[in-house]
Image (cartoon, rainbow, N blue to C red; front, side):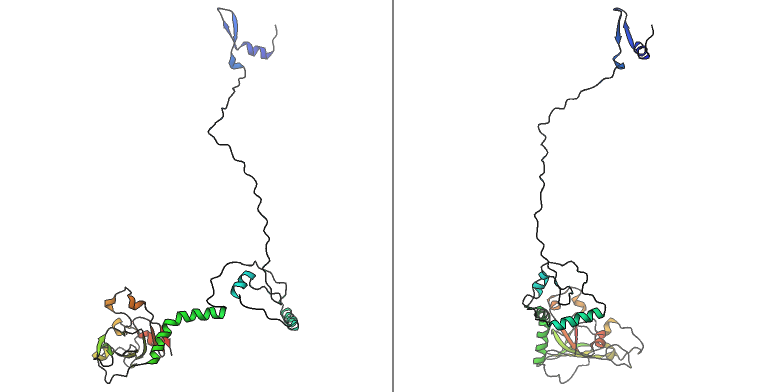
Length: 284
C-alpha cells in the first residue's frame, strides 16, 4: 500500500510494545507548547500615571527702550534702578529730525538690530544718582589718607638745630634727644632723597618730616667714603632706604603695617626706586 511521505516519516517514529503489540508514538515528533502563568506581585506598587502639566501663560512685558533717534538704550528694569530720580527732558522735534538726517548721511540707519534686554538687581547705589555714587565711594576710600594729609597741613615740628652723621634713620623729636630708629614711625611723612650722581646712583641722603618729628637718613657709603661707578645700575639691599619694616619684623604683618600710610614726595618715580619697599607715594 502506498503511503504519503509524511506517513512514512511517522512510521519511522513509531515505537512498538512487543508485549501488547501496540504502537506508541514518539511525542518528540509532535510540536509541543508550554503555558506560563504569571501570578500578580502584591508588593509591587502600581505605576503612577502622570498628569500632563500645562504651564501657565505669562505675559512678557516689552522693556526695550529707544531714544529719539531709535538707538537702543538701557532696559527699563536697569534704567529704573540707575536713574531712579531722573526726569526726562522735553526734546525739540526739529533737532531730532536734524540728528536723524546726520546719522543717515554717515550710513547709520535707524532700524538697528535690537539685542535682548537684561533684567537683574544691581547693588544699591551709594547716593541718589551715579554722580553721588562714585563720589561717595571715592571719598570713603580716600578718607583715611585725607585725614593723614590734613594733619600734616596743620602742624610740622621745627627743624633740628643739628644733624648727626650716622648711618641709617635718626629721629629728631622736639624736646628729646636724637634716637636711632629702623624707619619713620608715623603714618604720614613728607619725604625727599638726595643722590650724589658723581659717586653712583644709589641714595646717599634722605629727609622726612611728620607731625611729631623730623628724620634724617645717611647711607653707609657716605660714612665709609666708598662709592660705585656712575654706570652701575646694581643696588645692594643695605644701600636702599628702609620704610615701614625691618629685618626683625620678618614677613608677618602686624597692626602697624595694616593701617593706612602715605608718603608725600616730589618726582616720586625717581625717589621710590631708592626704597627697600616700594611705597604708596603721592606726587606733589
